[in-house]
Length: 80
Image (cartoon, rainbow, N blue to C red; front, top):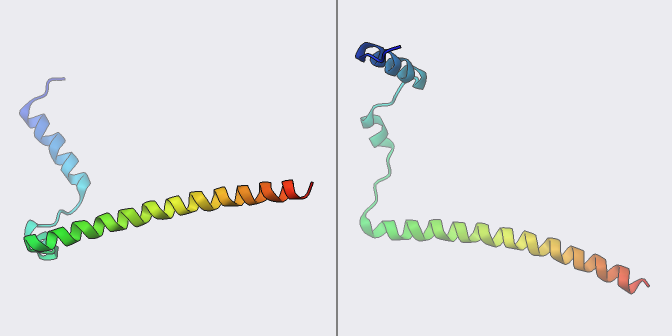
């Protein structure tokens, strides 16, 4: 099958139809939050602090599991 411009347009139209209704850029712009350049630093710092807190929570969970294992081992050794 040869790929003609007509066939290509048809394929593109079919694929675009799968996306559903598209919002206009003006509607999306109304939803956007505008920040000054000096505010961007605090937003980035806030995102980093959230990531750091997630990492701390993961580390806390790992350490709690390790502590439970250590406590269990201590109980078995002290019982002998």
